[in-house]
Length: 437
Ligand SMILES: Cc1cc2nc3c(=O)[nH]c(=O)nc-3n(C[C@H](O)[C@H](O)[C@H](O)COP(=O)(O)OP(=O)(O)OC[C@H]3O[C@@H](n4cnc5c(N)ncnc54)[C@H](O)[C@@H]3O)c2cc1C
Image (cartoon, rainbow, N blue to C red; front, side, top):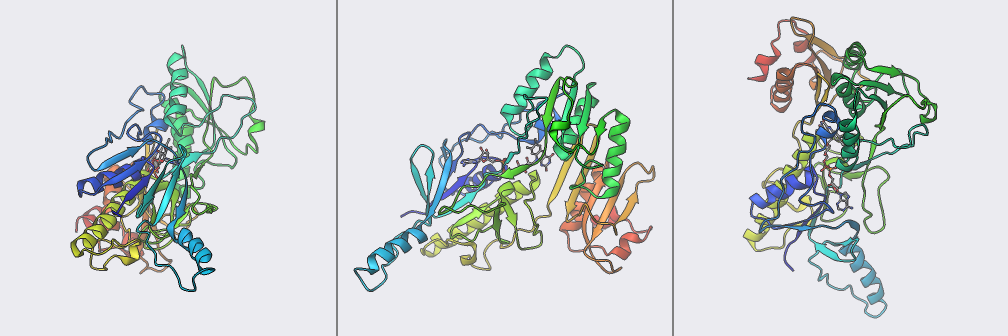
């Protein structure tokens, strides 16, 4: 049986992996009900009100190497489990184990009833938005998918005057919607459960700076909103919800993890031949392990590239040697290609005119950070370290309204001259110059 790489999901992680495998001359099958028609998600929360392009397609087309299957994957069964049940039945007749004649690691079962065998599968199914009911606004929608965003956009385009927009939730997407609405001349009120926005995303100095900027721009905040039931009726013309999302998970041999697919540093799940990338994966090992999905564009893209390199190399090694392709990353020769995903993760959020970035490992709860401002005092960076000692190393950086310094932070964190807490604390230390060493 020939080797078969199948990718489930044609979002950013899946299309990137497919493109890169295609560039290496590898055949790949991509399963997604919208394969070939998927688009970037970030513009959906930023460009509903300003008339700029909200729809940025990936321009991902089938080629000689890329086969689209426009269908929904419903379940995966593994060859191991099938062989095991066959073995159990057969051992009642024969006392010795059957040879495994399955080259496939497993089978993907589709909504149409068809099925596809794979030797290597990349799960790249992303997340879906939580959809709370807001009793006073039964039409309330999240801005997670193109369909939702276009429905909202139609209301915006048909408005004859300034809209009064209600937003439930104060994470990145909620703040992007509210700030961009106000920047375009509309009114926006954010209803949040706690006392300040972005509590789970950013450290205190950054979220306070954003809170102040958004209030000054005219965004209203109703803090300590315990329940959507408390939101008053007949106030808003348009209501948008933004209260998180959860990974879309296809069961494997009937099992689905509680949170997301845990993957090791090579993005391999515990199932033979099955890898996971982007928003549906939690990286549990390696330099950028985290207790939740990274859930950001640069990481989804980086995961896709990493897996293409890993699987492309693995197959090349196998075909050069004429042996069977490895089914897990652990079978890859240690000298061949990358073994651990180690690109510096980063995130960007444009909230109206405000631009905020993170790079590396940062924590919203950190209280022993160091802040460095630009000469005007308006832009700043918050530096996070891997410990409290002067010799502890820089682990992550948040950057407020200072894009060139975000680029410097990414260079520093990705290089091999990581500065210490003592260096960053020194007012004469030139972080930008250091980033170019
Ligand atoms: C509104 C919005 C704004 C954002 N803004 C930013 C930002 O400013 N900065 C940033 O860094 N990140 C941002 N993000 C996050 C970023 O877009 C995601 O991290 C990224 O898209 C994840 O890529 P992915 O490939 O893992 O998943 P997705 O892009 O979600 O793609 C998943 C694909 O899998 C398909 N699929 C799901 N289930 C199945 C199945 N059973 N069978 C077949 N196919 C399936 C879906 O149809 C979809 O096409 C934003 C996200 C949203 C929603």
